[in-house]
Image 1 (tube, one colour):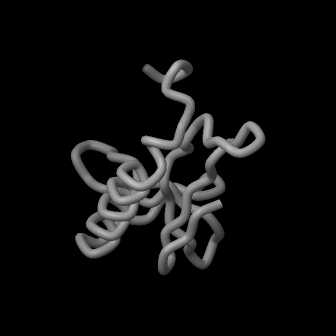
Image 2 (cartoon, rainbow, N blue to C red):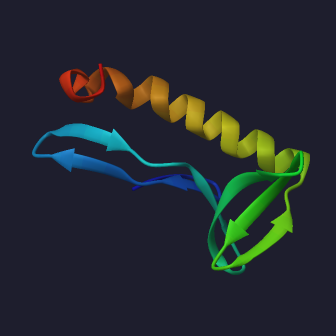
Length: 82
């Protein structure tokens, strides 16, 4: 698990290498919520509920996800994802 602020993502490993990267989400009062789009609106979806995501939350999740991909992707098993 990688965490920065309220953002987190789960990563699968096989020994010493990363093999897959899950979707990034955000810790909320209701637990882990994922960013989804419903009728053009950004929503945080968690355990059967959805709340509108603020622009700062959308930006934080996107930045975290992009930074994480840049950091670990070169070390992931590229044969499985190439």
